[in-house]
Image 1: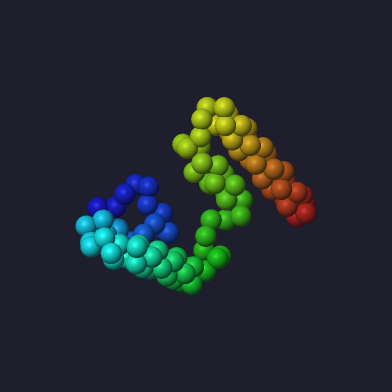
Image 2: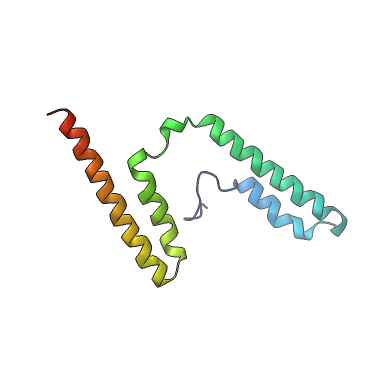
Length: 106
């Protein structure tokens, strides 16, 4: 079952199972198993970026909004208000850039 908080870089189910099993392994081997787990996670991250061209990601004009939306649930109300204001500024910047681009063609 997939977790709603999963991202393309979240550990695979196989690595999550390994992580769940480590605390039950012989204490002498736990450190090495955790290191192995992290190395396998790094390998998955490298494969992800090797397999996914940078051009296939979120378009340039959406990355700011996407980042702000991802952060919002994890901040207090004061910071939330600041981030929402920042999001509005980013949207205005995008609109201005679009207008500039459109004016080149007129």
